[in-house]
View 1 (cartoon, rainbow, N blue to C red):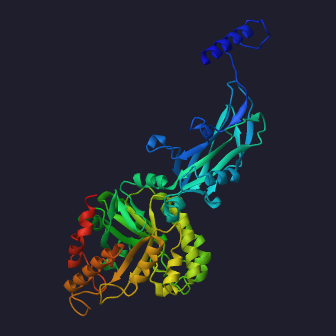
View 2: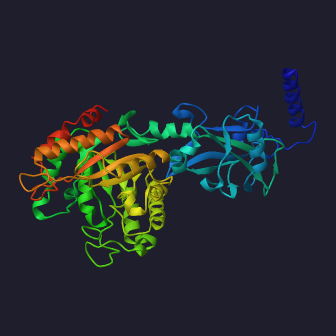
View 3: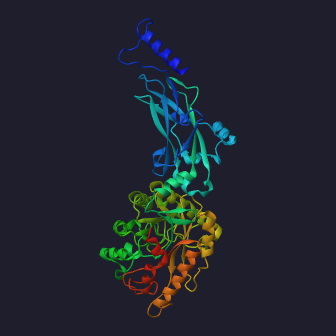
Length: 502
């Protein structure tokens, strides 16, 4: 039957073009077809239905989206049938809630939920110029998809359609596509393409497909902060990094005034396969971050700074760092601010969320930690947890000073809060005295208690534990130098040795 129709169609064209019936057929090129407007993505199942799956398959070549600038840009389009050279036209882009609801209620898509309006954008209109087709994008916030564990296992649905063309007519069918976005598949895409980058799945960290834990140290001295005898030369920093196990995590400061140090640190960390926790701001105004001080150096930043003052120098610095180093595997994570205190927790929550969003928008490749102190600084565990309840935060932090026991009195509040939010726990600063005389512990005694803390925290849901603080020459009880036995313990600690294999 199909063959018969085809023969008759060719015969008709022959008659038309032979002049038996008047026609405008061109002897060199025949242009044919009627002009109807449709969405090609509505036809991906061959006419079975209008479902458009994101991604369309399991391999890289089947991806029908682009991951860029903190967005999942899903490919959509407009097409006009017919091969003739038509005129330019515009068509409106709309969402069809009734079609979305109908699909979800039908049960045809497993674990289907309507895509929340606040996480996606669409152009209101598309112009087709100089051809019969054009591409546009449904842009979805990738941070929400990756970090909001409430969407685990779900398929987000939104129906996108065409309306009101300026020329031609809409086709009778295939003028809308039911976009089906698999949240888990999108997450797998990001996790799969982060070789060499530390990433998060729930409350655990991973590196190259393996769970990642580290027991390490803080070193503000690497950022040029401290007395003259505490600071390292560039050559000494390079030698330090070369002496450490691969993929160990080292925390230091990257304040606005430390940029020159930070640039060199990152290059040396890349060279020596070190991961850095870079703290972007300082709650106290000293060493490279003075703005917002209430009484000059060493004073806390004012509440006004957390409300609006940060939007000048500090916000510019945050965007610059995140943009410049988004592709560097040496960044283990960004930390927003060092030990914020003397500010209402609700103000701090808004500040943390805003800065986290700016970082993730500019740099979707790296994790974000808060830098918070402990629950006592914010009115209790409930407030501490609420502060971290943000799509843009991956890691909650505790700075502990309980020197006489393996577990801080405040760790349970951090651990319970982060587990409830399915985020990572980090003990960011263990303050521990040790020295030859006049200190709480001998150097060897400090090693024993710090190792006990490492063992306890890493066995009880923490992924990162850091002791304070490495300097070139230690003249105080609360710091240590390269020749201190604690450094040998850190270099040979089992978690750090394991990381070197990944």
